[in-house]
Each structure stands twice: as structure tokens, then as C-alpha cells.
Image (cartoon, rainbow, N blue to C red; front, side):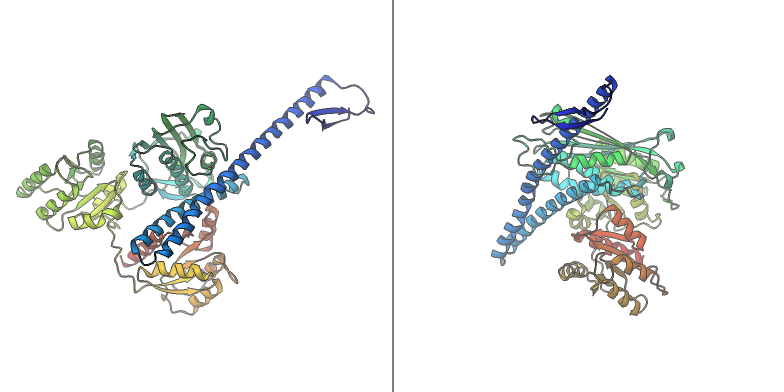
Length: 580
């Protein structure tokens, strides 16, 4: 039978039978045609729903992009009109920075969704520290929660393996998106509780990305993440569409909350690509609970072992029992004896007796709260009592940058961030008790004189050059500029060996790009060509861009817009490493 499928004037799909066709239509053929018509109708409905969602998305994006842009333009005008009022200009700049950060997150969401739709998103595989990653997330999220006076608890449960193999950038993106949403959609003074745990993953069920690169002997295991809040919650109807692109809850409570409606769709795609699982429970007015499970391989263990003073005692001064118990467990795992005191007076009394009887502990772990005095007041008392060399470690959820000045003046030797990981605590403790290997105090001196170091900045855009030179010059380093890759190669080649200590390399440049320039530098027959630290500083910020930079011979990657703190962290870490 020959037939055509067309639309009649009422827009319904109908079958036209060819009058010249031989034979009669069979029942099976009719059933098959009805099935095909059903598939086409479903596809048409899905396309119409997608178009409606995209229209809503464009409308939302027009509003959401204009909101931070309005802040940037408006605050710039206000700042210029009050240029002689330092406090007013500073306030404007802070608001411009906040609005710029939000605008950047909108752009990143749209680009990520575009790459997912075109199937161009790839996963990286590298060793990373779970402790460092969770600490970074805490630093990002806590200020947002503090602005709404929310109680944000990040709890570390059973974590056996901290060094993992996987894609830390995408894992961070998943976690920041979910916790950030909890902060965003939870009312002021609300509560958010985040937990991380691990469990073994049976080999028979292991589905790891790029498993050909991963030794099963080094894993695998599940990383479990839960984020529970008591915020506004979601309806059961919306939960069915929560992972659909461009979908957002629309009600009076959320009308003023900015967003693209892409975050959860990106999270779901990333979790699926990482062979993980994600579930959501929610109730309007009662909050939400997100649970994510992701498989990771365990990174090969480092050969460096910590040498702690076995059998020595450590004084814990903290009124919070759960954290004190966690610290005590970590110390016992390291072969140390924990002594717990909840008040400052009891801690000073115990130390006084211990000093008199010549049984001083090897260090003190100072928690964030005591029953009778401020933690830093206790640090001052202990420093006077125990002397200049006695190690005092501050274990706190506070931002170290904000408390560093007061803490160091009070006598704190080092800072251990919360959520607390065993490796962070024991490594810092081993370093301060002079038993660690290759350890550095967390209280790094960012006032170190860097004027003897010389940096080559490779950047073709004059405005970007000006910004980067200013940010780098704050540290005291000497900065020389090359306008493209070819000029960078020439400057490096004609300079004496060891003349440049570090290179910041843009990628997209005329005449010669950053990849080619790096390759040519690495191939030069001079002693510093293979070892000089080359950092990609570029707007090419996707995972595959980072991989291409490494394949070209670059050591690190920093994306534009450049984060000044990240820039300085690279400098101090690299040059401090050279000194030590």
C-alpha cells in the first residue's frame, strides 16, 4: 500500500491512501501507521513545550541579565560622581563586584547548557583532594548564608579516602549548585545541613568514567552527599519537572530570586555523565532534601608519611562536643592522646599543672567556642604560659582571611579549616611539632617580599594587560609584557637562563597562540625551558580547554575574569615552594 501522511485544515494528522495502490490496507499496517502518528504527535508536543520553555527562558534571561547590568552601570555612575569619597566609591565597587560575579554565573550556566545540548561536554580525570574541594565550597557558600543569617552546617561523616580520581571542577559545580540553591531558596534565619560520607562500591557495580585509566585496585567507592534545608520547598507537580531545562518555580516568593532555570538540569546531566544518582524530596513550606551518590576511584597513596610524636598528649579546648569528639578520634588514629576541656579556665589550669609536672602536651587544638571566654583570649593566655614555640592550632569555620590578624596577634600558630578532615589536622600538627615532611604552615606569610622574581605576562589586549599588571604588581613582582605568543617565545629565548621565574600565558592571540608558544618554549635546548612554571590565563575556561593547556605543556590554568586572590595564591605558593 502507498500512502501519505499530511495535516488536514484542523491540524490533525491523517492518512491519505493512494487510489492507485494495489490491495487493501491490512490491520497490522493500520496499527503501525497509528503508532507512527502517535510518535509524531508526541514529538510535536515535546517541541512545542521546549519552545515555550525557551521563550520563558529568554524572558527570564532578559530580566536576570539586566538586573546585574543595571547594578554595574548604576554603581559605576554613582562611584564616578563621588570619586573623592573613598567610602562611597568602595561601597560601589563592592556592589559592582557582586553584580559582576552573578552575571558571570549566568553566562557560565548558559554556556554549560549549550555544550551539554551539543554533546561537547567532556569530563576530566585527575587526582584531587576531597578535603580541599569541600573547604573551597565552604568558603564560597558561607558568606552567602551569613548574609541571610542562616545556620549552615557542613558535616563530615565516615570519610576513609580523601585523595580521589575524577573531575573536581564538575564535582564542585554540582555541589555549589545544590547548596547555593538551598541558601537561595531558604528564608532568612533558616537552616541548611550538608553531610558527606563514603561507602565501598562493589566492583561488579562499578561504573566509573574513563575506567580504562583507573586501576580497580585503587577503588572504587561511592561519595554520598546530602543537602537538607527548611526553606520554601517545591510542589510535587514541579518536582516532576525540576531537571527540565529553563524550568523554575513561579510564585510570589520566588519572583524576586534571580536564576536561569538551568542549574538543576546541568546538575542532572553531570551526575548522569559521572554515572551517579540524584534524588530529591520536597514539600512546599517545609524544605527540600537533595541526595547525590557519585562513584570515584581512589588516587594512589603518596609515599610521604606523617611522623607524629607517638604517645604524646594534645589538649583540645572546645565546648562543642561533636567537633571535640571528631578531633579526638583523628588524634587517636594518629597515635596521640587527646585531652578535652570545655572551658578556658579549666584548660589554663590543666596546662599550668602539666607544665609544673613536666608533662606538657605537644600542642593545643583551639575550637571556635568555649563555655567561659573567647577562643582568642584563651590563645593569649596559653601563649604567655607555654612560651613562643608551643603550637596552638585554631580549628574553626570562620574565614581565615578575616580573623588572621587577630589570631596571629593572640598567638595562634596555624589554622585548620572546618569542615574538619583528618589529613588537614594531622598534617598541620605534624608540621608544627617538627615531625612533618614537606609540610607548610597554613598561616603562610603573604607579606613575603617577591620583588626579586620576574614574570612574563603574555597578553594581546591592552586593557587586559593593564589589569593583570596592576594585580600582579601588588605583590611586588617585576612584570614584563609580551603582546603575542611569538614575542613571548622571542623574549624567553633571548633572555639569560633563569631570567623569568613564571609565565602567565593567554591562549587566543594573533600571530601565535598560547598553545603553540608554550610548545616552542618547552622544546628549547636550555635548562629552564622544561621547568619554568607556565600558567594559562585565559577566557577559555572549559574542562577541555584546561586539558589542551596541559597537553601543550602548561602547569596550571586560571580563567578570566581573573580572581585576584587566585592569582596571588599561585604566586605565593610557587615562589614559597622555590624558597623551601
